Amino acid sequence: MTESIQAAAIPEIPAERGDVPFYRERGFHHPHSVTGTFRRIKWVLMALMLTFFHTAPFLRWDRGIGAPDQAILIDMAGRRAYFFFIEIWPQEVYYLTGLLLLAGILLFLLCALAGRVFCGFFCWQTVYTDLFLAVERWVIGDRGAHLEFDRRPLSVGKLGKILAVNGLWLGFALMFGIAFQLYLGDAFQTLREIFTGTATATSYIFIAVLGGFCFLLAGYARERVCVYMCPYARIQSAMFDEHSLIVSYEGWRGEPRGAVAKDHDFTGRGHCVDCRACVTSCPTGTDIRFGNQLSCIGCALCIDACNHVMDRFGLPHGLISYDSQANLFAKEKGEAVRFRPFRPRTMVYFTLLVLVGGAMVVSLAIRSKTDVNVLHERSPLYTEMQDGRIQNAYTYKILNQAREERHYGLKLDAPAGAVMEVVGEQGRGIETTLEADRDSVATYRIYVTLPRTMVTGNRTPVAFLLATPDGKVVRNVTLFAGPSD
Ligand code: SF4
Ligand code: SF4
Image 1 (spheres, rainbow, N blue to C red):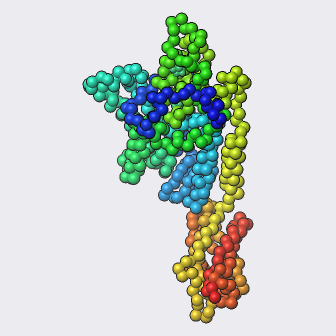
Image 2: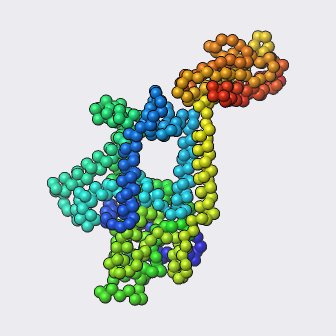
Image 3: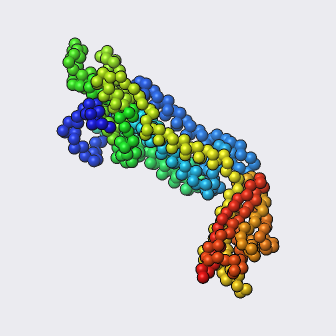
């Protein structure tokens, strides 16, 4: 961001705010409720996200006989993860890595386009804090009533309201913990077990821990999570540029601010009436008039609050708006404004997103129902037989992801004179047949023996070729160890 843009668009931070401590304990912030476009969007998103989170475990997906029919399931006992038609085995944990990578790049792209829009609209901390604040307002009242409530001495009535708020928070927090648990086993059965007291102790502990964190973070820690605990807040400034849409105060239009005169005359002064509605409605207590700050989660509630104030005085909306620093600068100069979503930074993020996403889709589409893992025995690396031949041992694992038992042809590709022996199977040679039960991992121990003359140093390449019933051949190249002289 150029210095001129920064200087023009952001009012100077007064000296008394210049040395903001790293951590400031300031009691409880009770933001004012607001109405408006962004508030409505947030309510709708909250309803959609919470509804999906709590109902998705009950969605069914037919995977055939013997397979779980829960659409989204992390089957801990069966060591599988299911997402509709996708089934992930523990050996395919790289898909999880890919998913995390995709999420990271998407977050970077969102940030470059529209600032901390994820924090303000989609983050679970924001969603649950919003929900808990709504509960608090419903029981105790809005900001003014709550401040007055805090000043009141403790009484039976006050205690009752405090207990009611905490009770409702606890209810929602436990629902969160229970909903999470439903993704880890059959949802209907798990729910029955939880409420009939027949679930495992681990399940109850899991619910208590998750619910406890939800209760504490959304009920008591609130904006402190965003300001002091979340690492994303710390790195966000590296992801913005002057064209990112962020919640911004139009300093050139708002300043000099001041209380409004009786005649509502705004000649020679700014449009900010210094009512602090933007600050009191902010869930993190940020004063956005001092420019973009680490504590601003981009929820846009201050935009709604300020637009109401502008309406009251017949002034145009947008004193606080979603806008880029470049546009603020252009507006101040009376130049044309434009949103530039296609920039080198966003194009790089978008390309990475397409590449990683595309690679995952292709690999999921072409992946085989058979996977093979070959492990060379390390201790000992090789054995010298009495007749002078060299023997190596391998652990050979076949992952049969099909829902039926399968038979495979195994062939050894090795120098002449090689002999392969599969423990527990008949015959010796270089070809044999192996089986794997449905939906399981078959583990074999294989000995390969080579004449001493065919062993070249301590790393002779050999390969196992597995012919699958669907006509594919899985080739695994490994090494045959021997004396190095
Ligand atoms: S709500 Fe608008 S008018 Fe009121 S203090 Fe904030 S920026 Fe100024
Ligand atoms: S300053 Fe505005 S956008 Fe930022 S957190 Fe506060 S209300 Fe939300």
